[in-house]
Image 1 (cartoon, one colour):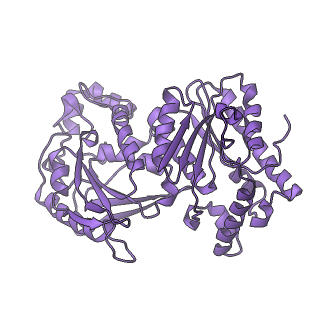
Image 2 (tube, rainbow, N blue to C red):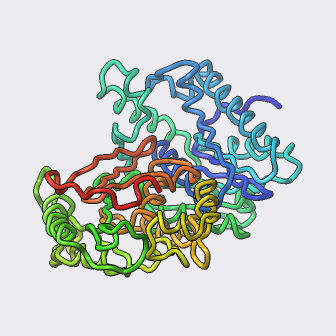
Image 3 (spheres, helix red, strand yellow):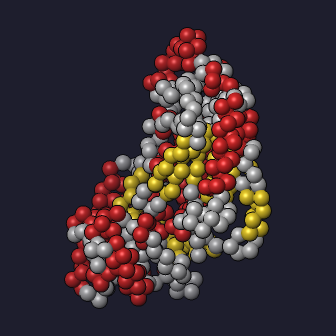
Amino acid sequence: RSPPPSSPPLSPSLFRPVLRTVKLHCTNHTTQTAVANRTARYLAFFHGAEVEVFNVGDKRRRAKGYMKGEEYDFRNRKNMDQRMKYSYDTLQDMKDFLKQKNGRIGIFDANNVTRDRRKWILQELQDLDGRAQVIFVELVNKRAMIYQAEMAEDDVKSASKPRDSVEDYKKRVAHYMDFYEPLASGGRLDDPEQQYAYIKCIENGTQIILNKIKGYMPGRITQFITNCCHVHWMTQKKLYFSRHGQSEYNAAGRIGGDSDLTEMGERYALALKEFAEERICVDSETRKAIPARLWTSTLKRTVRTARHISTSVIQRDNGEPWIQMKARHWSNLDEIYAGACDGLTYAEIKERYAKEAAARKKNKLAYRYPRGESYLDVIQRLEPIIQEIERHRESLLIVGHQGILRMIYAFYKGIDREQAPHQTLELNHVIELNPHAYRTNEKIYNLLPYEEAGDDGQKQH
């Protein structure tokens, strides 16, 4: 087929759930990439989908390197032809990926801001023999907020000055806006784009418009995108993960149960209170109180670890009152249930249930304890939790359990779910995650640096 017409891109992303393909598009490229990458991780981690993001900007960076803002002028035919070639080649890569195996999901992360471009994409997908279901996703914001931390690292490094990358990006956005045609903007029922399946998220999700969204997987994709469509704008939102303080079962090397904290666990609970009130609930630069959330499981050791963190009423920027760190207890966050092995040490499990111990060692992700749970079961009950995390815009502290936090941590770090059960989260530590479009920054804080929690029996298990 011929290369795409020389018209500006918005952001299409193409999915192929189970037997079909779904596709996205947005207006702000960085927002689009953040949503595309986050959605890909969600589909792979929580639905086991074979999914890949095909980013036109990445292909351009590999082939050409940095492009200045004026090179995005759509009136420059030479530059437009070159950019369209990157789009064409990337779309072909995605089509090859989708054709290789049924049930794959491809996300075409590129800009498609005109009707001609969107029509061209649909034409290109016709040779998938009708197996592709296309969903356009348009993220619309009146303000263009550009954060260098959200930009592709190669673009920032390649610019002559870090500031140049931001200024060039502003010029790029201005060129796009000169040619931008909103999706289904004709205002008529007979507008051809009214036949497209699409999601419009306006002003960070304050208004959502859905059109012709049908089926289970498109429904899950829609819910996730409408929850996470504001991710680029939430620069202050951070996630904090903490295991409960040392429990009596930790000290004895036993798994599961609902035991209370040890004396060390209580000291950690007090240290966590200070950390939360001084770091999570306060802007590090202005020292002004900022809204934050607190979640725990329903089990005693997490509830008691978080009980010292004070709640207070503060005012949000819009003047509304906010109850700071009001604890919410989720059964979805309860530790993986060990069934018949609950309350045993790993040595006792190996002695009493040798075959079970061997099976768990062979496939930790899929192994299910007798009359208990597997990590795949945990993933199922954590899916609503992730939807809620994405929906909220405040920083969040989760006081939880190693088995549960392993999975949430792995999702946000982009770790395959097969490797997720092997992650280690130490007692007495807090992990801070700051997700961006291209990466997730991480910091780890030891709140009891002069105390050793010892082996809780889980480090090698």
